[in-house]
Image (cartoon, helix red, strand yellow):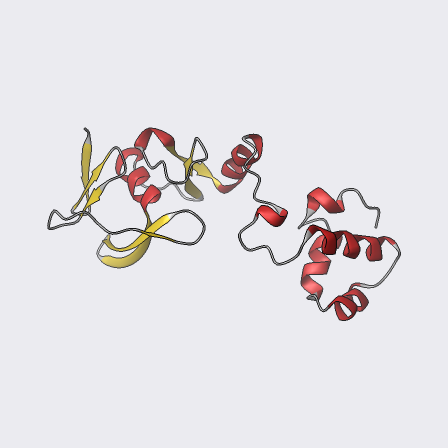
Length: 162
């Protein structure tokens, strides 16, 4: 099995990382399916994702503006052949094409339901002001404005004329 030593850590092609003393590092789920740990990287303690460590070990330093992407969509498959540096836009496009869309309720940070967004869109279509909708629904003006300008929840707001 192929291994690379980077920053004093032994990184194996299957995603296993051994610490500087030879012990297997403990990784923890960040709540979104990615494994993370505190690691001494480039001389400083950082929180790093396992897939980023493996990608950096086998595919070189992270290019500016890029992120480590799982090619098969499985965030637990941290094999070097399943990882690649992609821009955020390229990664999101790939996720969408693979049916792994992270917009709307599929986004881990989602706070609104699709029904609420449709109600907001309906009010906007009727000509209500953002501030009035915000007060009425107790939702931040910036969120409603993002929906109005089709920057968030586009898969729903595209069906409305406002």
